Length: 119
Image (cartoon, rainbow, N blue to C red):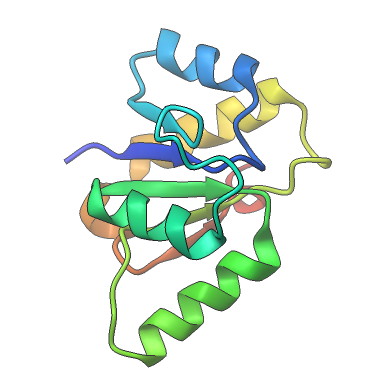
């Protein structure tokens, strides 16, 4: 099964979302989901409820949430952590496309990927 993405408000750059949409990638943003200014837990819960992998540049908080959920025996649909300042939009898109081509939704379940590993 292919990966659907959810971009939280820290990561939802319009140019990146448009570029991914133009390549047939299923992307929903925090704006689409009416989750602007909601806590991180709401973003992860929404993404999980929709079967979407959450993408965020908020690496510290979402890695912590990932660890807490697993320790509590709970699950999520996956997290991709993006160091936004490190990569221009074109690089982010290419790395996301590589990841999506290799990983399935099942592979991402309860898993964290760092986009920096997909260069």
